[in-house]
Length: 260
Ligand code: ADP
Image (cartoon, rainbow, N blue to C red; front, top):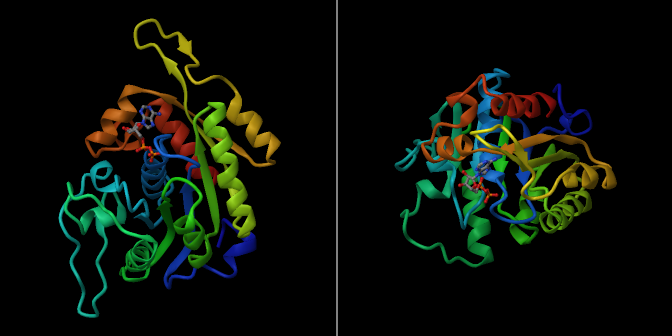
């Protein structure tokens, strides 16, 4: 297909899906899921692609909330789960299958078998692109997703802080080890713009992600500011790219979508 020349010829390892890309971060809480959701919605709506979104964050699934989806997926006659759709994106998450307040206390093999069901046990239909919201970090689950799904590429999300960037580096190195091309680094929570006076504050430092991207020889895909509207629209299940399509933040996400 058009995007990932080296890998596109092979295609993904799921029938009907052209490309699978991972949205990853070295640690939790940096805005990986927020990025995955806005990117998926931008790819579907601004770029007019057929898009799926897989929540592979087994221990902390946030896609159901962020995409405003509840309930259990229906199962087809051949026992495949039908993805649940909203905002033009077909979604699957462990959050649809387990009770919201129940802790998920699974060991590795159960996580793997759950991930297998959430990927290959789903009737995705024809997709141009499946966006995978990865679990944070660089453990077993991340490695096996990277290897088994034949990823076309990975996007790394980091805050500008040194400590987050060290983890982002680890993430990048993991993908390199398994020969998944890194599409680039996105800096989230890059700065805070005061809603009253408009002054920008670089709460977590300035320029760190750009430097790390340069150092690691990967593309810097852009920066997303720390904004209350991003958080509130996520919580309401109405991603900012749809809630405020003309905002500079929505444009920043759409820019990233167009680059991948
Ligand atoms: P992760 O997937 O890395 O754990 P999330 O995407 O769940 O992180 O984000 C953690 C929290 O931070 C969420 O409440 C989310 O709404 C909020 N958040 C993420 N990015 C931003 C941003 N740029 N501005 C404001 N809030 C953000």
